[in-house]
Length: 349
Ligand code: TXA
Ligand code: MG
Image (cartoon, rainbow, N blue to C red):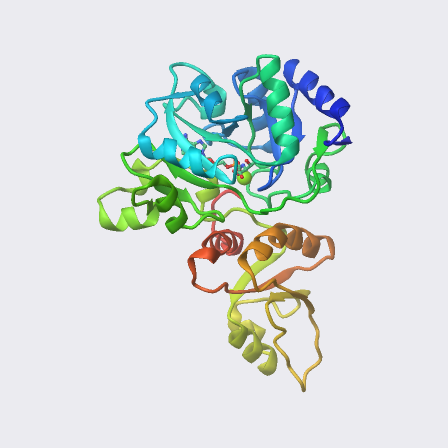
């Protein structure tokens, strides 16, 4: 059931659902979440069940403001306080040391917890009303089945979980890809999952140099095994039903021109869609593909990405060629999501 998130009656209904240990669909500026009372383990376990998510993949707890993190975390480093002061509310999640023996379902029993303060007006209104009744934060992963494309509209959430879930409609998400996750438990800011904030912006706000986890794996002897688990960092994730391939415009053009799709390891019977900043023209050939324009601006592109992948699936497309994004910091989050969508490995999707 989709209800209007801007209506105070809807907020009251959602709070009542959370108080009795139920789940709701929650709009944020990044993507929609599937939310429970973060300190209620029984309620939070229902999220793992509904999503089909392994219980050792911890969730993000959403709070109304920085003051509310005292209910969840302690030993906050100075650079984490700087990040919260400058970038909250917003599309930023911090990993911090968890208070003893709380939110065990949300954190998968880990000693750390992921915390985020969303800027979306409906999320803010809900979180504040929750505080009034003693709910200090909402556990919420993206509201999609494990491994699938994240939802950026209320309708997408309904398509994932059906009409029995109460979903607050907050309109299409303004950011469109998930928050940047920064680990603050290892003495310096380490970006575990890129989003729309660049490393430079994180460093500036933190007032110290931030690293990407990839950089550290190369520089230090930090191994994949010793870094915390983040399901959004599995090689295969964010996958639509259609097969996704990343190519330059030049590559697309050449393959269409010669008709040798096989050289791209693709299926010549596939129903093809192309998402690129310009249309790869093939003057002498039949244009036997669907073309949609990819925005030439990283913010607009992030906003459109997941809805476009879902739209291609709904149109019966079986193969999607997407233009490899430019190699600039502003495109890092989009490139990350596309590479995982295109990965056809054996990991869970
Ligand atoms: O924008 C977002 O972050 C959205 C909205 C709803 O807030 N949420 C979201 O949640 O993307 P989810 O569950 O799809 O991704 C949360 C990520 C996962 O990759 C999870 O493994 C990681 O956060 N995470 C949670 N707790 C962690 C921890 N203690 N240490 C390391 N990673 C953690
Ligand atoms: Mg997710």
